Image (tube, rainbow, N blue to C red; front, side):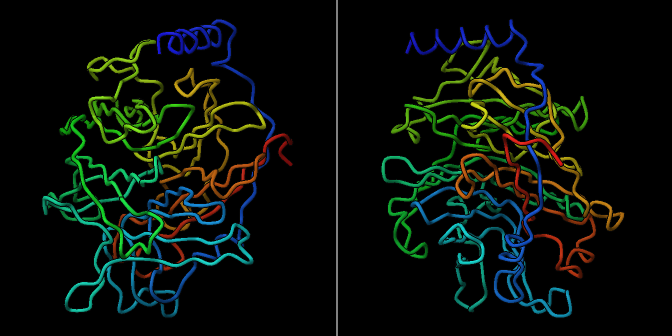
Length: 374
């Protein structure tokens, strides 16, 4: 481990010394993917959700993880006889949107009404499902615990904790999953800004890197920074094995954890892009914006280069109450030289969102590397 830390430190120093933190714009093009949009444009059952993380369960099976979800019908472009539940999942079989199938899952209450796929073991609030990973035959899901604040409007909630869901049998029917829940002991939750882990998860070598956010609201919307912990691949649920990146060292105490760059989002993605031999993070600028950003790094921990604006979400201009967020990449469904990216458009007016079923579902883009933009 000492040698690995030394090598990582030398790479990080070299990248900073030789200017990788201000590397020129890589060659890439960006296009929309209407064929993928159509896969998730449903008029009955699951009809929209935000979140939209993915991970691979097999070569041709992709698990989708959603947060708040519409279940019901869409009639004349509006949600009708519908309810919103706090999370759902889906299994996509195949990667070609012309041939792939998607099946959605949620739980059903005794009265027959749909309810969230997974609910907190302590019966407090609800979960939004963040990123996850399969390790040693088990599926691990990072679960953001949310409660209501009593305030009116779509932002009347607050974040109070993170849990780790451990699925013992992830290859069985999801409705038969056996899930253990462990409260993650690391974090901070306050009116001045939260600190938490689970925004993005990536395996690299013998370690799983667990990215998160450290929020400082005294700096406004740009006051959210990327942070990272790591844990041996087969020890994810052993919290004593977690180590936190702090100024070139991996420490057992998260006090002094390094803020890798500012202006990130609550949810984002990190993955290795082999075409350009760089790690890429994709996120919505400051968490809510029409701008989807990408930064690159030679290592999983940085230095993260300048932010490249890869796309402006047009839906943000459709109505004065609309906003875009939740941008992230999906290497599980991408070719080697590309990244498929999703984002979501929502409205600060719940009833406006309910009346427009063309929003509040994943929208798809493709970033293709090794080419110049048209």
